[in-house]
Image 1 (cartoon, rainbow, N blue to C red):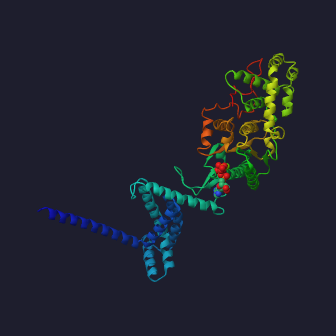
Image 2 (cartoon, rainbow, N blue to C red; image 1 turned 90 degrees about the vertical axis):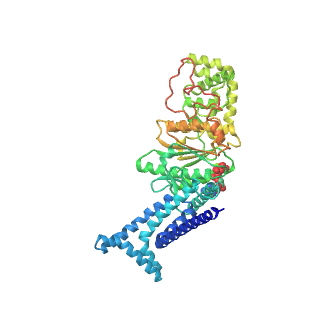
Image 3 (cartoon, protein in one colour; image 1 turned 180 degrees about the vertical axis):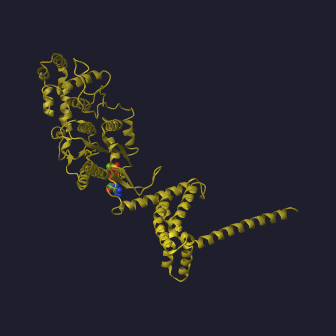
Length: 525
Ligand SMILES: Nc1ncnc2c1ncn2[C@@H]1O[C@H](COP(=O)(O)OP(=O)(O)OP(=O)(O)O)[C@@H](O)[C@H]1O
Ligand SMILES: [Mg+2]
């Protein structure tokens, strides 16, 4: 009992000392803030702006740097007035005191002019420092009242950053198709991770010559984003062609979902591309046709083979016979067939034997396959009917500067898959055709998962990269992305000849039996 009261008095004294110390410290801080009122004011405005707009601290530091020329001009002016170094060093102090006098005399504008050259950069730098400390302590959990504080802080900052990005995207002129440096502007940046933050994300058009994927939930704006990047890419690549003699751009869009709104999207794409300087925009199959029969013979034979379903196991025999017949029919003298009808005529009994009359090994092969010709012709008649006339006759991809292909991937998936296979093969041949003008090609596939059955995404990317074609694909996480990824990771063997090259074919490994056009045996697709 005797030591209880002294101990209590000691604890009370300790508490009083601690509180007094804190109060004194707080008061000293307030006095310092008041004494440096102009800097405090700018710092408070900076922190408020960073909080409201979700800026990173670096944005405030950059603003401080941008304000430094004003300080330099101010110091240069003062240097001409003050004769000595001491006078120059004391000039900010004199101006600061003069600013206080101006405030007390009611001349606030004059006070601001006097204090701004030093207060603005110093205040912004201080704001950046405080904001960095504050965000860091909140994000690492060193401050905040609850355990969820870092998550709540981050979510709120994200919302503010997204609001700022939306406002920037809506403001006229802030997000152009291409920027001053000829880069393609993707849109306003919400947040940058592991990269310097910039108000808008712009990439060099040559970067789009590699592979990209646009991922977003259904209705999140993937197609709209892609349409603007196509126009931006075309404008940038066209300007590089005119300025530096780089290859002329060729844009090939596969709208793999199809449906009525595909026509509206095609119209919108055409208008934007025309505005970006694209002369000829072709919309397939509604307005323009392109001929599958323009492919080099061996690529044509492999493509036709891959377009139909073939089996494995015992059915592999039938697949081999079909492939051999296709190659015989397509490569028969004097020239490859120019249309579906001409191709089907070659499968009539007797045609192949007559065509290969001067080539006994191939004539014998045609005779062996004779009993299967009826079945094969029936399958290809059905396939060509389903593909429609827009792939049967028409020109080549070189006839237009941009192509918008509408594939009915949702309504008729198997047909759209076959069409996608043929079109990607046509793109590959447009690039590798040595007699044609070299083109910088961007192949963009919107909702690619709808047609990825025959050409998997990994094959598309790999072939695109090896041929120097830019490949851009859009997909939805969950709904599509799993299918796109699965189709490239072994759930289904990817076809081998998709996106093959149009280089002259290698000699047949067997003198007696026509070799397939692909270097390896195509698998069922
Ligand atoms: N930047 C944007 N600002 C405002 N609205 C937009 C923007 N981008 C798209 N939208 C609107 O969002 C809707 C969906 O856009 P879009 O068709 O591009 O999405 P999507 O991701 O391609 O959808 P889906 O997965 O169904 O193909 C459209 O009505 C479009 O007008
Ligand atoms: Mg879309």
